[in-house]
Amino acid sequence: MTTPRRQTLQSIVIFGLLAALSLVFILPLVWLIRSSLMDNASIFVFPPMWIPDPFVWSNYEYVFTSYPLLRYLGNTLQIVVPAVLGVVISSTFVAYGFARIPWRGRELVFGVLLSTLMLPYVVTLIPTFFMWSRLGFVDTYVPLVLPHWFGGGIFNIFLMRQFLRTIPLEYDEAATLDGAHHFQILWHIIVPLSRPALITVAILSFLHHWNDFLGPLIYLSSPEKATLALGLSNFQGEYSAEWGRLMAASTVMLIPVIALFFFAQRYFIKGITMSGLKG
Amino acid sequence: MGRTLSRERRNLFWGLLFTSPAILGFFLWQLAPILATIGISFTEWRIVGNPQWIGLDNYTQIFTRDPLFFKSVSVTFIYTALSVPAGIVLAFCLAVLLDQKVRMLPVFRTIFYLPSIVPFIASSYLWLWLFNPDFGLLNAILRPLGITGAKWIFASSSVLPSLALMSLWSVGGTMLIFLAALQGVPRQLYEAVEVDGGTAWHKMIHVTIPIMTPAIFFNFVLATIGTLQTFTQAYVMTEGGPNNASLFYVLYLYRKAFGQISMGYASALAVILLIIIGILTYIIFRTSSLWVFYEGEKE
Image (cartoon, rainbow over the protein chains, first blue to last red):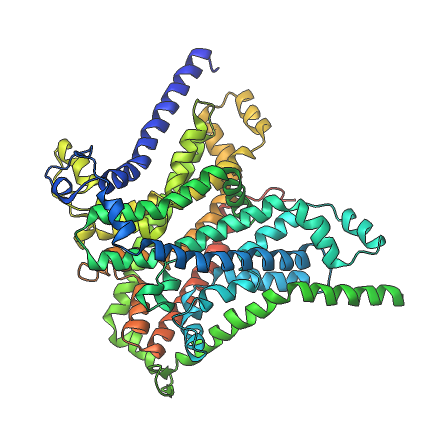
């Protein structure tokens, strides 16, 4: 039926298609880098040129020196680090309760929590904002960090639970017979075995907080408290025609994400597929 | 007997203790705010001062005297109808291509996936620049082909298709989910089709697609719910324009709440969105049995 020749031809066609589509997908990123290395004189040339001529680094120099990029980076980390810690620690605890302890009503409670996945975020936005403003925490990082210590979001709990369920329950039983209580089981048995899942959840929530725009937009009003994402939009407001600088700043924001991806590729893929399949 | 009872109680105690952060969080950050939103939607409230009870006035105004509400609903629906199915189809096609045995697959997979992790704010600015009619990438490619003058997001007739095009760039996550699902298709089913003299097309129609329907369905639901809440692109790239042609629902709500400080009105809009998403989800789930194939369901 399928002769070797036909097989080869098919492979060539598929390879060609993949190569062409890859080119399409990579072009925007090429354009990003290209524009970040051009000065205004060459960026506003018509028709546009593909290769920067001359190559200039001044946009990067500018965003690191004259623009508070490093401060924005520091601000972002002040949110990302405690928020990711909160997500990882509290989602592990909660997932342990859902995956390792059999208790009456467990599935019902989990189902109710899971249904919040469908909730549009704007439904809770206004009262939550009002609450933080009453407590005096608007224009601080508290509203962007504290809620993540409450289970870290059902999505992450779901991921952790899926993973914890794959660990044989006999381990817990054996440990219980040896007199271990739940905290010891969690710390000495579950956590060491769950490292891949913990890293996956940490990466996904890092991405989420690194990229978050609406949260900082709503809660942070002082320019000096802005995150990278928010700072980028202020940048655009101030220098709307400075495309080279804007592209350089965007590239700087993108680099940690890409680096993380290349270091931890398998965790990304694991997290994505775990979340999408076991619906 | 007494022992098992006490054990059951102990488990209940520990189970609730471990899950208590999430349960508490549910009441604090989900249930209470939702109820409050519903309550506020019956008031006129400008943050300073107390909310004034006005009954259903916000809703009456939204449905009878607010053309922008209908505009934003139609913008959001049109965009969702353009972007979600196209994204699912593209992600599926990419996954099928990546499921073949050719060289350099990991490289292609990485290239398709990378755009989906680009920070959304950065990709919004990037695409704003790509769409630039004079100096942008898209028209630079089209110009040598003799196509000139496309205005992309800068014309009301093309802004939504352009944004949908942009959304296709980040289908990488969905693609990976489909790829994992494809790799889970039992190989003997393909062999069975081959034995019957079926072609690659038959395999696709009779094996791959039916087995993939649960994954497609799940991603379709999530993408629809997510896309109905589109905000950042519209806020950053078009500011709802030109001429309100990209006035997305959440952008409209955001302006009512944080621009005009009409918290009651914005809350009513939020409640309506919740109802719309609820109804849509219900419809999608009710019709799913018509086309989603679950293994062993017939037994």
